[in-house]
Amino acid sequence: MRYLGDRFSRNKSQIGIAMSEVNEAMKLKIQATDTAVVFIDPQIDVLSDKGKNWDAVGQSVTENRTVENMERIFKAAKESGYGVFISPHYFYPTDSGWAFNGPLEMSEFHTHTFARTGPLTLEGFTNSGADWLERFKPYIEDGKTIVVSPHKVWGPQTNDLVLQLRKRRINKIILGGMLANICVESHLRELLEQGFEVIVVKDATAGPRHPEWGDGYQSAMINFRFLAHAVVSTDGIVAAMSKR
Image (cartoon, rainbow, N blue to C red; front, side, top):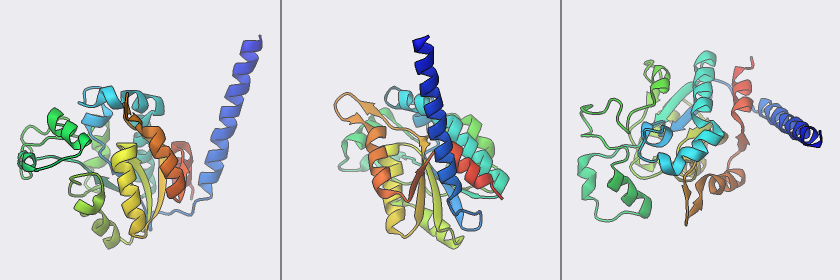
């Protein structure tokens, strides 16, 4: 009986926290005219058990229900008229000519993560690690989602994301995707430097776990709280996006 009581207390506490987070998110001043969803790397190699990096990211993706939560945000954005932007990560055969790389870049090249056959061909792309998750395709390939050019390292400094946002007078970002402590955090930092207001959705992302380097998701969460204008749950941001 004591065990059941303890479990009930924990569940009640968790429900209370979740409701508090939703209430806080509802206070956010967002609207479809100036706010957009930006998802980083919604691709098979980092979000699917068929991906090349599942051993490193799978536990975090599963625990956070990252894929399910990203889909909920896709759906809410489309239903409420919010713009959606995708910042993908691709490597082409000519990128193998890079003269130096960091440890994660070396791993990506070794495993052929996000590999494509070339910038002007989709040969071999469908269902490859660089492709979108199948469940995301109806949202990404609807003719309205803006897929920007690929970022080549971690942040948007090497693609046209900021330009595409500015041209649509977007100044607030709802940010999620992969990997939390690498590309998502790099996008967060650059978007902040560019003057955007950024809301990070904490369970619409996930991070790698490494036996020596540590837990990438927990590392990112610390920095998100220091840096982002808000850190919210999917429940909270979906409620905020859906309010009229």
